[in-house]
Image (cartoon, rainbow over all chains, first blue to last red; front, side, top):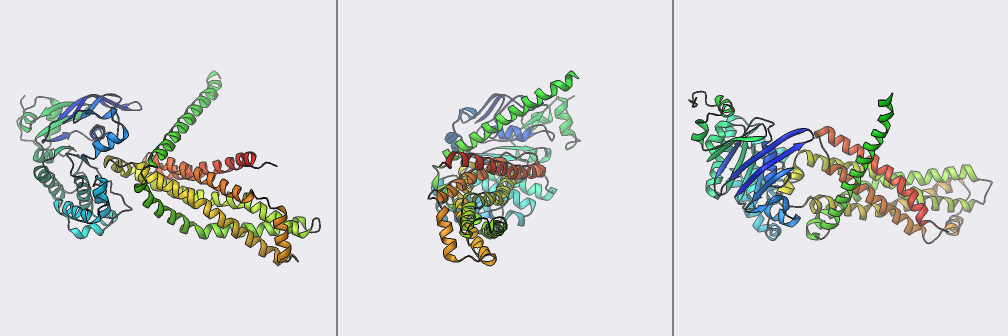
Length: 250
Length: 262
């Protein structure tokens, strides 16, 4: 289980998170919605300990992330797959080496035949041909890069998957492909997922539960039905463009 | 007027705080490097690749510059001292000035531009494109994957390149002298030996080792702490070259004072 309690974060004078309470239960997929620049990615980075809160705590599987020592933090991270917004692939390495780095068990990482098999398997899971493994990130399209990023994130068989805007910058067809992939991976791998997005339709397609972050706070958390029935004007404003026919409870 | 007077202490205060913060962060980086040294099987293969890149990639430019430095030293020594001191003295001047000063310092300054800029730009780009975050998110230490291989490769290869630069500088000085002065090989060897002290060679390598530390640690630090996209990468790269060059010159003075004693 992932839990954020009263998390505050500011960069200089800019307050990004202002008392965020957020939780993700085992096995569910939660979409974290919000306008651009509201701190969704910052919140996601708190979960994996890439950013530390100024105030408040982040708990993953009962452990407070801020109190973990170097090795403990590395061990916790090995159970979490993180899909970066722009892939964040290592551009000096080919796809094979990129995905291989996701194999977090050091003994398995050293086992070349195991790595070949595992990388092929992960590439297949994200609908990429095994031949892709010889290409470099610069030779891949935006959609392929995102899928390689997902393959790297799942290579270590993580318990949690964190997606940072997996469909941003993609055309609607490729965005749908990524959404279906996320849904399929959640079902096939049985992972717990958090997906940061401002694509409302994609979030409704993939998530069991949704949360809206705006103004540095989570203003609504709940199921799709609860979201559609929300009286919160911020929720209504956010959903209106994608669900113009929705009858919000007035 | 009062505001103008207050500006100077405020500037000094900010500069002091900024400098203290930079020193603190460099110390954390050094601590991380030391801690990551235990992960030999992670950094060793990467270090070999980096060492090969530094060594082979820099060999030509290092030999070229030290060759010219040796030749120019010989020609200027001939211009300055002919007729005033015995010719074989010039061999001593050339060999000692190359081994003690020109070899290590010129090599370090060239490599600060070549390796320092490369390290800062590579790590800076990795930082702004979230590749370093990605590495951390995979539970892997940027220290053992990125920093230690670069620092150790530099600590090995920069002194090695300095030894080659010393050799090249002496050879080129020797041939240049033979071209412009009636000096025999035996005279040159006699003059070189006459002024030679056993500590000269280790001193050259010790200096190169310290310069290597300055170049690699500063450039890795600058690259690792890059902010604000492409502009930030440019700033880190120039910052790495300027800072490591200044530190090289500073270390040159300090090491001469500390290590060269009668």
